[in-house]
Length: 301
Ligand SMILES: O=C(O)C(=O)C[C@]1(C(=O)O)C=C[C@@H](O)C=C1
Image 1 (cartoon, rainbow, N blue to C red):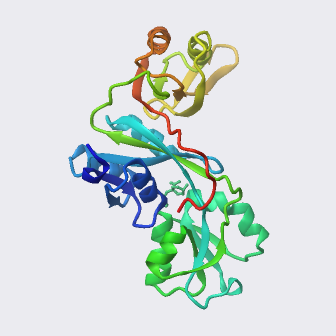
Image 2: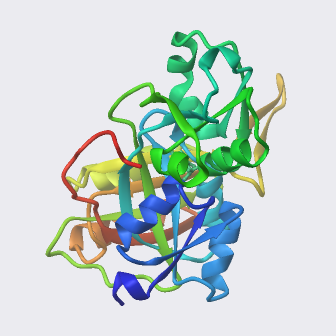
């Protein structure tokens, strides 16, 4: 399917970085705004959209845990990834100066990506998290707020009629967010271009399995690009009785691993066959082409 025929769900309103990521993954697609991440998953499940694009990690702010949890709860497949340079601006109504500000609002991730710069600018402001960056800009404009600035893209400034008070307030100019694209069906993995595979696993006997799982990749020279752990929501705590001393309470985790190989590669197939022996639960979230676009930091709006 060509990008122009695709409906791609994203969280936020027009001007959000997720909308830009949808456009990068599927040029000329119809981007469908959704209130929450979960609504974007549902849009694909209910055939309202063909794909969803979701942020999973940022180079400054770290992982977007909510989406890791949702990947597990829903049955969609990862079919691609997009790395988007994120260039944040401090936006306010025309005529508003930095000294008038008492509050800065944005997506929690965007606030954390700009934390040091906000402090360095000497702004005496409270920080408030809202659903998305462009939504913050829209809110400032719609409510004519002269004491509040939004952190969002230059495109959001244009769409909602705000001024750029500070251009590029992310703490690092190479700020980048990685998004994954999701579909109802997996794609057929190939070996003629670089692929990544994302898996999730757990073991009922706790975290001791982790070393064995990682060695299955190390012995086959498969590089890992990411590892993430999340609480095992169905069984967050394991009690270990020690008759003399009391009861130890261990936390239980689910592990997410991304590795640099396609599921069409025999090395990956053998590694996963081995991993299956060590784990009580294993799911392949997707095998998909790596984003290999040339690196150009900043101005990613
Ligand atoms: O609020 C937006 O504009 C989004 O697209 C969300 C989001 C995120 O969740 O990390 C995406 C990219 C940036 O890292 C900041 C915010």
